[in-house]
Image 1 (tube, rainbow, N blue to C red):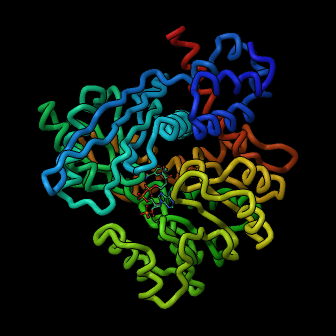
Image 2: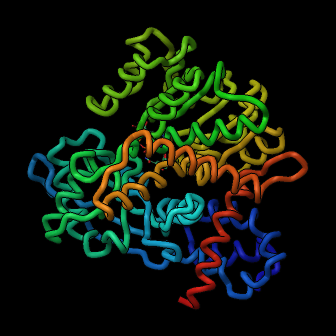
Image 3: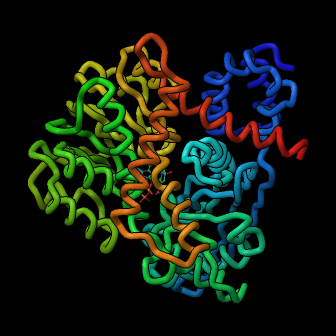
Length: 445
Ligand code: NDP
């Protein structure tokens, strides 16, 4: 048995060399579980933590495809099937040039706890490729997706592993992937979530991560007797999560003032309203343009290659990618009076920045709790597919709000101390217990 956190982390680092993002995710979870594990040594004796950090299966494969010039291109595909103790592997596919095993293992590991928090029967997994859909034609994206699925289909299925979207994988890519699965397997099943509405998708799925993040944040604000009404909100990203987080902030009376992409961020002090957001959705989802165009269209500032956290705000919702708030940026947020940070993205806040935010009593909602709404509605999409029914928008939105409130309650139950809530500890312990107990029940497998 391990004597200390560093003892355990040394063993993780030795077995998983060159995987900094994975180490970062495991370190955060281990730190918040350690005292709990010492009080509950049966988990340590059964080596549950050691088993949890070891994926059940990892598949890495070649993805050859032809570009529009008829040239051969080669990418690498991955699926990390992390843990199936409480249900089939479930988690997104990411297509981005930065994708590597470390990033997918960190995402898959986080997904195990996140899916557990939703209370739905879903294990954790993640996958993707270093393919970059940006700048590719629809034909090239289809060619890549078909080649990727030709291999992936051997490993997934509606009761085995059910992927969804993530960065770079939206409705278009899910369509091409589903088409190829159906063609090879000759079956129409709920093997992917995030499908279009007319062929098995769920209402509210596109909105779910962003809306869910805002519902969770509203619950956090309520603990201080506050709400979104009248609050200035800084949001990063301008993709799926950021767009629908902005929409729900506007619905609840808040004022989003920033959005970003990898080229920089826009600052609109008058606020991004529904009409301006419709422009962003068309820009990003249809024309696939850069956020800089927003600044030109609406006459506000674009800060090239910068992130939004220097802007004064009451609430920050990082919704682009991992490690996008560092400790300097956390200090700026704190000194500008930001009272709440909730992670729409996965692990956007660096560990030192999390510590600074928590020490300054800024409400801090970690991604595995705050952005669990997406996978929760994916779970509801699986249920609808299995029952061959479709719930209404109102029913699904109500279920989503109920799930986010329940995740918040679990964080309070396991993370409250002297009037303060450590949402990181609360989410990690609550997510751990369900998976760990299932693993104990199922023996050494
Ligand atoms: P999208 O691909 O729709 O959008 C991603 C956004 O982030 C884009 O604006 C993109 O800009 C920006 N971005 C990506 N990488 C970088 C980078 N390295 N530096 C700066 N900006 C970057 O993805 P999603 O909105 O789906 O995902 C965003 C985050 O939310 C991810 O962390 C994802 O894991 C997480 N998440 C998503 C869920 C979902 O349901 N979609 C569920 C739970 C979590 P550009 O276009 O210039 O690359």
